Length: 95
Image 1 (tube, rainbow, N blue to C red):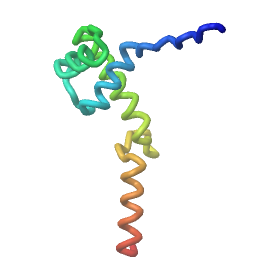
Image 2: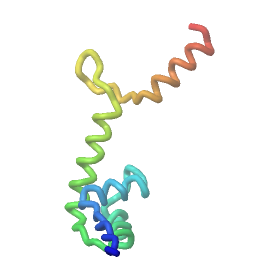
Image 3: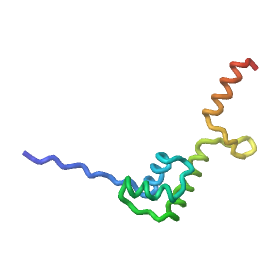
């Protein structure tokens, strides 16, 4: 009888580690807060400057994907949940 091969555990890359830290600690967490979280969670060392760079890229990506562009090309800053809230208020008021 053949032995079953163990599936290799895939370690997340550094950007994924920073993204997980932002999810766990909050979007505006500082690199000085993120670094020890990554160390304790993944036993990995990432330089604070690298964490700052990754966090900026992740925040920008999230901002770009959550807020649409208005007709003039400027980000409206409204998320879809904001629009749903506005629609609900309009229905309640009857405007």
